[in-house]
Image 1 (cartoon, rainbow, N blue to C red):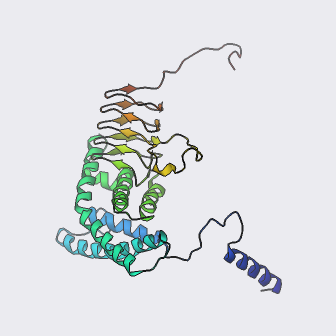
Image 2 (cartoon, one colour):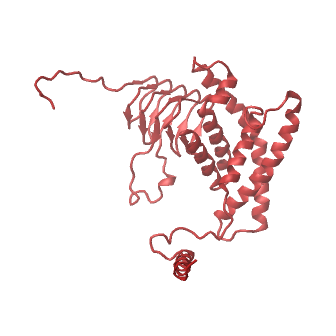
Image 3 (cartoon, one colour):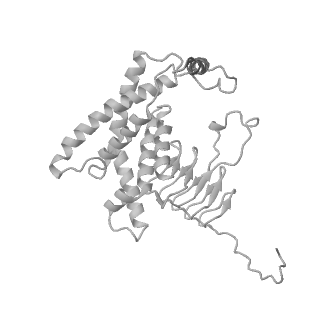
Length: 301
């Protein structure tokens, strides 16, 4: 390598190491253990294989389920404990202490204790998806083929970790599903049982959203927040800024439901609706009908 090339490389290495540019000084140095996207993807795959063995992970015989579950749960414990520890260090001023390691182990065990209940709730989501789609032939087809199951599975896993107080990791897990499926569910959202999303692409569910039981969404639905000002809301993360959907609500494709409003029980929100006010139970909210007009000789253009 020419001396001039070496000099240019060294100069830029030194500059980037100092992190001295004023416009990116807010980005923290990597001086703490960080969660690994690769290992967290493996954690997700292990969780999927534990909850629905054979559908995710390796194909297994009926007599080998307990053996494979044992291997996967032990592997999940070791991997997740490490990642939770890194997450705790990531959010800690003084990382790398024995208390954090002990805490990570305890949190991991508490999560594993919740897996049977998570499997039960996810089974209700599968049934709701099956019941709502005449094109599907079996529950197994729902698990294998429907992106909504993968996204909701990640969400329910991440939401449980968030409830345990685990930082950073829950958001990574739901964003992995977002990348995989196009469905964006914040781990802070609260979603009831028998939840389903038809098709799913482009669905967004915000952090403080509350969804009841037997709710069905279609593709492109946004359960979001209205624009806020940081000058008015000093800490917008603590503001309840997303909608509440009561039981048995159906929201059709590309509807936008924004702000802390309530959609009453048994309501139907039509496609392409823009809704920023609460509606009572049993409401039917439809888009205004298109107005058809005829123009002659270029009039109306």
